[in-house]
Image (cartoon, rainbow, N blue to C red; front, side):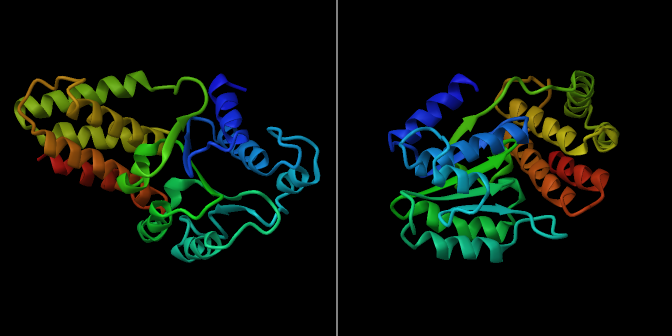
Length: 260
């Protein structure tokens, strides 16, 4: 377990954990394991960071009445607003037998826009002894209003990056910035949509656009920051559409069209 994870668990044991935590990183397994450990720590009968007590055992088996796992259900591609409305209603109640009610949303980037907005007021005015744990590959995939009310914690090692694709994206953006050649954007969209896993390729495009907007990448042209940020926001929308089997190339082209 990483030192960051150990520190987070110790913070939870002391009762000083933020009411809304975003756990993000490249490994969903690590994120889920840490979320489970946090739920145990917040409700362990022995006051440890998780042991063999009855409460920890029931949390492990997903039988504890105060620990809830909100996931994509059935054939759905997104967490529905109905699921979040149930969370909001449950969050107003006191814990049944544990010290804390815990809601693990996995993946948080699977929240629909309606679901995110429904959750927002609860995050703004959290009930006492209630903790939300949102799991995502990147907090950039969540609405800014959700991020602003949560504490983001990175979990895991370095994120592997496709340097070949990154170089192609950067050179294409530079070409468009200098020459306003839309063929460069179409070439980027084609390359990104053909890469596997496509979601990671789109996220890489979004990261490069954010770096360009922040001045960390000089595109060598006169693209406005507003247009670059609009395209970056478009990649987030593209990832959401990808979750419902939209055409990857089309949604990436739509995101990049914000630069034109």
